Image 1 (cartoon, rainbow over the protein chains, first blue to last red):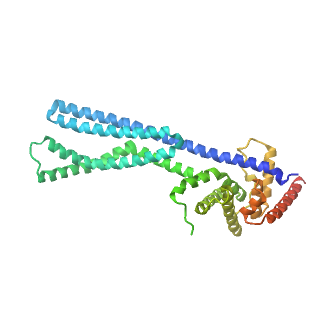
Image 2 (image 1 turned 90 degrees about the vertical axis):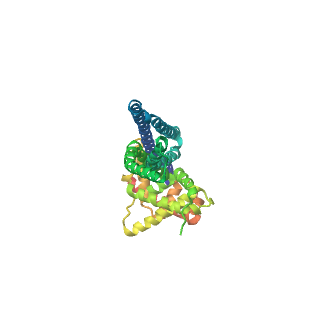
Image 3 (image 1 turned 30 degrees about the vertical axis):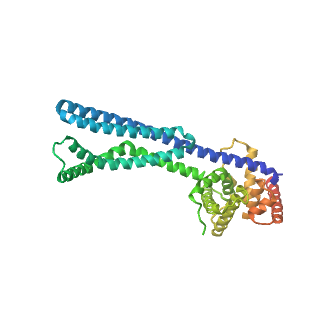
Length: 203
Length: 171
């Protein structure tokens, strides 16, 4: 006949099995989130390489044009692309370091992913702001650098208006490009982070 | 009104739930008959634990405190549902045994145990569960909020019920 004390072992064995099953489910979910994160990271790395290749292509195109058809422009283009390359390399190296940090910190994926998502978010907003600011700065300093006329208030205002106009045109293009290159992968990482936090919260 | 834990307590709370989630799962399996109800109760218990967490001073063991909160939540919910007549008793057929390697004797004993638990009232369920978890009378009395003598009397009745059930099953 089954007594309550005899059933203790059955109960504890079943509880242990159930707990292991719950832990296994949590592990599987975590593993799947880890895979999604690394896949998004791989796509961001590929997007950065494409970005560098496109920049190299346009740099070469612009410099060849200046070299063969407009030598006066060469100095300005070298300066402008010098800045663009320095900035792009700085940003790309920074992103790669952040991505490496996530890949190397599997044990605490959530913390490193939190840093990556937060910095990428700031980076994307900065890129959108720069897409408006940079044409203004470019037009203004381009004029100062190349023109033989002195800068008057009237010309300064005109340059500002031209720069802003270019910025307004450039902004949606830049936004589309950034979204295509990084935006979707950033959204995926954000989603992974959110699910990881939910998963850790519910155990 | 209960104040939720401060943000710096979040991690502590998550760690607590991660470590002791088994307790909540066990309470849910005893009081709920199907997966959907178990999930609902799990969320209700989590919410109550979250609300009670700031007032937990560490006077008792974490597991004792967690059992108290989880069982109180399950008992009050069980009472509400019973009034509405919505909550059904736990059915042994609904037990998930698929993950366990096939062991007929184990399954039979488990089915018998859960069908016996089904026959008990809400307080008896809590007592028998804690007893199966190897808690002594003193600890059970602290968690359920009845005297040690009362725990002894109720356990005696539960054991009697169980013997009768076993006899009926054998017959």
